[in-house]
Length: 306
Length: 323
Image (tube, rainbow over all chains, first blue to last red; front, side, top):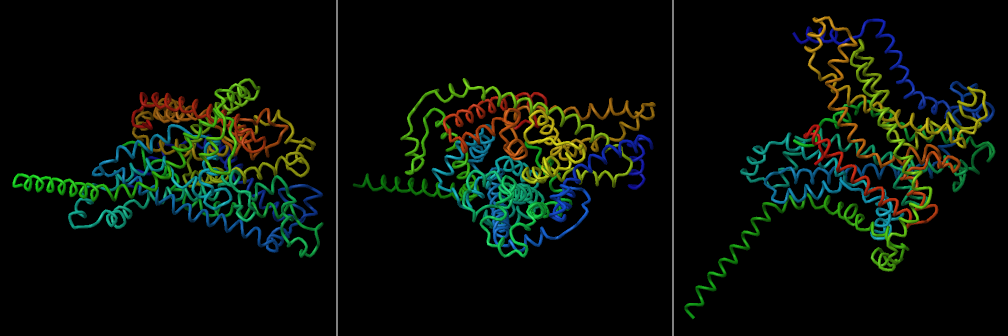
């Protein structure tokens, strides 16, 4: 029965064969422009350095080489440190963000919470007005004294008011008051109700906000640009940004240059730089197709109001 | 004495009742307050105090090593002087114009292309191919502007870039302002189109297929179906998305305008927007007064726009309004 209906749908909603081919080409070409740049960067990272300086970046180079990645391996320390900073910030940031966002959202979703109006408005106001870059900068550096600490990378994105409102709606829809009531009559504490009843019911929503948070932290370079001047705390994205401005940074502050077989002149700077771009992109490019449905669902889990 | 004792006893019991009432109130609401507390504290430090810190726009601000309050107290009030400087410079007009025009461009392009893609993809015959297209189109959306700046450099680098070698030219792209409005509009749209078109696609797929069946029975062609069924059904979402975008029209995408042109000075005329101007004032030129004036200007106008567009949304579709 179901199958038959699906087939009918396809027939109803479809172009004729020639139009279909035409639009497939248009959409297909656009889709290729979305992937091609990444492919191109991968190719550059695998190109021989002399070929690069002679012919420039090519989609299919005359000579391939792994020298970029080999040099990255000898460089080790600095790159690993940045990678490590990015991983730590992403992991802790995501945990903090998902926890605080969902506990706040849960509190204001419960009808029995007397001050839920106050806390809802307290959160909504933050979405109306933006304090602005300068004011945030002054508070973070001068009041909280977070400059050159990992907290400066984590805290500015630790709570998302918009996600709080989305999650509030999600909790209201997904967790019925009667389940909670029966748990309370059985003597469960609020914390226990939250951990053992509410969270399991809200897994899809929490997964979505966690993924958005993780993506935000991994991709963040802006907070590093503002608050980090200590080389030891530079996350990967910001390191890439600094190296783009000045490719010589690759060889500065790292003893590896001298140890590298060919000496300073032979360092495959261009390929190495692109290899770093590949490493920063890989975790996302390799995983997002599997998480895609959660991201897309993020659009629909909270029609903001109920 | 006899009179006093029962009285005090009564008072005592009232006090006890009050206290136990308080305890009960706390045991009812306390856990929720604790749940909400971390988020509320965050909002105090990352929203409410910074909003107050905007007074620096009316001060000749200097950082004091003794902390925030000392910095505020020691900076002199200058009234509207920072704003006077800002609006008497050419920069204020330029950055406002750039921010508005680019955002208008993004809103228009996004709307037209995303709706076009969504409708076309809903009518394609091979649903598996559609999935593949959508997944590919989402990739730029998930990457940071830093990474995309590298992508752009691979094409535009004057000596090694693909574009110069393909066109057999020798153009220093990063010093030629005339090309950049096009590049920036293209890139900003390209990065977001996957996400936006999926949003519209979901709505198109949700349209009741019987409409189309009825239209076909009546002999309507594909184009007529799209014009008379699909687009009218998409209209509420299109309106909503546009109004929401207009509410943010004073806010530029810092990453696009700062990292992609590599903060090149030769391009400032076409790449300067409110956010990059504020950032450069804050860090490079160290002109905090002017920068904070620009920042407050952006926030206030942005807030007015957001509130008024939200009122519009409420009229169109009250469920989608933010507040």
